[in-house]
Image (tube, rainbow, N blue to C red; front, side):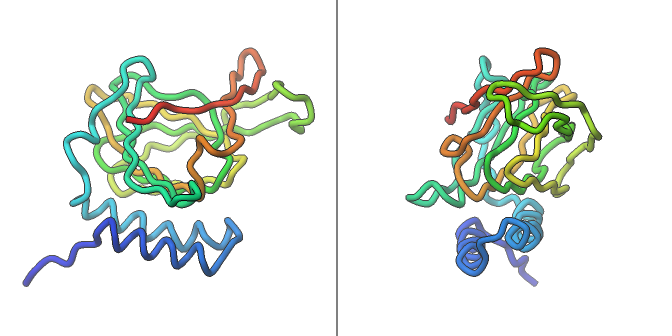
Length: 187
């Protein structure tokens, strides 16, 4: 008996079909979630280069797919041990799944109304450790941070409705109570 794999091209086709049928994030996310989980369980798409990290940034972002209009972007993200990224939003829906290793995700609540540009009052709300094939989802304004508490590089799969560098996403500093535009470097 042969193992039926769920390939990256099949996943992309399925995701395109979902995005063509629904335009509400709350409809897309629950349909994309099991597909992302299925793709991470197989892992045949994962390559050694997906473990490469940018030392300055603390993580490596490896583009797996992006539509010409910057929609339906997906990345393998590698996290250096003891590193991560501070609180940020994505500016688009997101489905994130663990691939190799555990990553601590902290979800943050925004206390202010967002009316003052550059200002944000946020507090940690709860955290979850995301391991292999564990899936978490985000709406465009949801805020989270990620940290690799382990002693080796971890990898997660990130699927977005739009490439986050083409959205109005922000990074937050809870102590300074600031919100600034945020983009990441890709490999």
